[in-house]
Image (cartoon, rainbow, N blue to C red):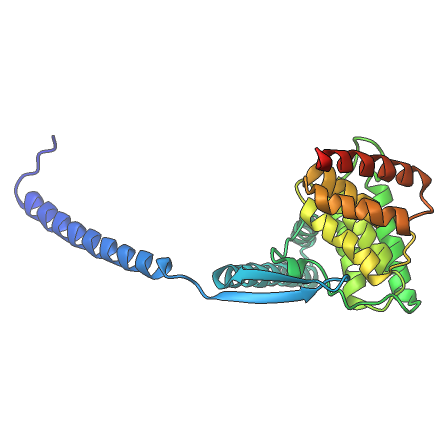
Length: 275
């Protein structure tokens, strides 16, 4: 027990009275805020047409959209201010701090920055690889070099930051040059990076694979087979996997090993479905 004497007791009583009143006000505001938050947020409906003519309809909570936009905006501002800070130190001859800012910028580039809404994560289905563009070719070559230096196809050893940088470069290529004849190639490698080097991103990987044959139905990349394997063994969507294994037999005849695997798996899935 704490004893309070004289004027101290009066002061303490006054403080406690104010605190209780403030607490009541806070509690009332909290209840009001909860009541406001409990009201259903308006929904945003978006739709996109698939290559087979079907329509995907996505319902996005408006509050989610607002939060995502806020994150993207602050992220962009953070990167812009880092660049300004580095330039400021360089212009004032402070080499050490300029290097610190540059180091932080490099770290930021090595972080996978999600767009969270799938429509924003994956570019439009309407792009077409029709033109040879020198700048796009250079970006594509640089992306492949980043993957190679990051340990692509070296079992168990890879640099995730390099893979993330390569994926971002491929994505920039697609956005800046949507008619480049390298967009389907870039999409394939985005799918590979999200499947192999960025854990838990299979839903993004299969969407990138789907863009490959949507943009270029005659692609030489085994995108259908790779998507089938992900749907089969990681996402456990055997119906979709079966469709893509069958599409592999029809469209990806230049990959003999994949054809054998697809044929075997079609038989297994068909038997399982029969049982």
